[in-house]
Length: 294
Image 1 (cartoon, rainbow, N blue to C red):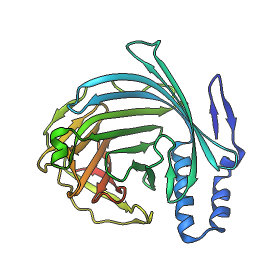
Image 2: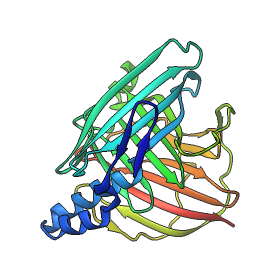
Image 3: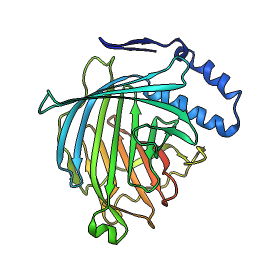
């Protein structure tokens, strides 16, 4: 695997032998450790590239607040023990506003911890989707990958004076990443604006589905049951490029809450990642669905 731009060229021979590393590592681990080991190598396989993209930020009412051009590099160490995460944001309205940061991401139990938020845990599905969430359900990040493209969204809920009385957190903001691996020759993302609708989703047939259980990291088949898209007090955000988000207006601790990211990545295929929260004591389970439009 090669990561390159004018400032960095990293050739990782160990990553070219990823299967060997994973088999050798798994042979020396307990079943519980093996699950975390598989999660870590899935993370590297999905993210270990240079990504170019657009970060669009919206407030809780869906109003666009900021658009940034982004570059992100996930550079694994030669022994795959850690990953350097570099990012650069350039404000589209004021190109002189530039933010650069670097973090080190390490593999540790009970999951992969991002240094930006040590209280959060990341999970990864074999169907190229994942979620980062924090107990307490204040925010979550969900992502989907297809080929050279990646979409992810960060959904944040914060209490306000009224909602706090009712033990609810109201939708505060949404951040949408649309990225492509740097080796892609053209930049595929559209410049269309967000719409908030109550439209009907197309009828789909689920062709592959599974649930990744938080805490155990067990990936198990689940029934192809339909999702209740139109429960009371939910919002549907239609982003550009076939990306949509279906989320509750508020999170309430006693309720079961689903945060649903959908991506129609071709004319008849849809991926969905569902972050399913059920209480305050743990992060979300991750349900992944591969669907065809019928």
